[in-house]
Length: 298
Image (tube, rainbow, N blue to C red):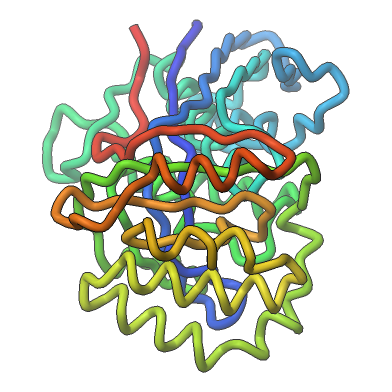
């Protein structure tokens, strides 16, 4: 009883910490999970490849919840490996949860799809996503529940969500090139100052309005300025990217900053952004958005 799956990292359009409304977009960086189930085991052992001391409570909880709901409570083991840096604001927890839940479904022999009315579909990706969000809350790795991040990682494209109700408000495809700067330091979502973020709620409401109008790049730029201030990060990387990017924002609770270039924006030049960001300590990665989302691996 073995299953494998992959899910995507993501960037931020709107941080949900201020109002509970959030928005994120999927990036072409993956986390992969392998789940082996053992009906004779009543526990789950987790491992993160290349990080023997990493906290595996989230992925272990994902397996346990998935087998309780769709299996017979089987235990076993889960191993993840990832191109998404942890604690960098690129939704590594959401990607790990989504990949683990889908891999568990695969190990159980279940068919995963998107149409709840299709009799051939045992589990929808949206249901799998919600179960991963529940696991993240129970594991204490999220303040907001991160349904915005999780939905973008699972479904692809850009999503807008009500995280308080776990409701998907909008989902659209996007075709952006993206540039990600990740400084050496790390920031954990569960440690974010939610009370300070609540101070920028009026700006978050403006960002939500822009996102629901489909003005995602403008929304993310406003978000980045507001939440950089609220979370104590310098806005300098975003400001220097603005003349050359369609949109740019602090991603999640930081510290990564993501700039995007839309194909219809003649002024967008991510090479110019890269030249500026490579003068800063840390890593710069060029990637794209993706609209396909998480998937079972052969």
